[in-house]
Length: 120
Image (cartoon, rainbow, N blue to C red; front, side, top):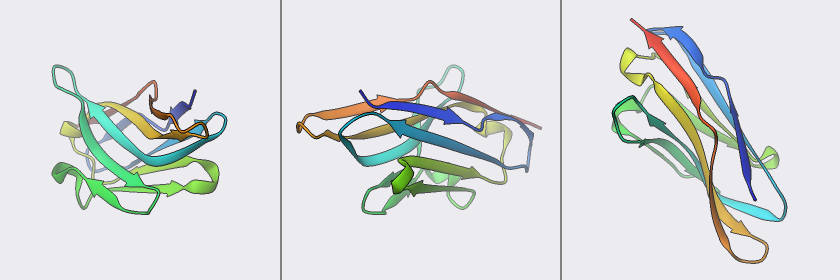
């Protein structure tokens, strides 16, 4: 089973920055895509940013120009640099990875979530 461990959340003032990290571990697996989702209280989980093994990226409109997703394939780690944070960015941020095991079966894994709180 592919496990994801997130770090880097916390409390920051509006306009500040945070960097989230997510490391994937397990046996005999490859990653097709890794990304970040978030869920605010009373709202559905939404995509924030995703990056594929081919290097393509996709962002939610609400974070374009402020957030940057990057990936270290050698470390199976994805990062989310969040700048110019706004109170509406407050949410639990979840890491997601999907791909295939060496056996050919597909997987999709989620991290435990990390809280990001932006004060006004």
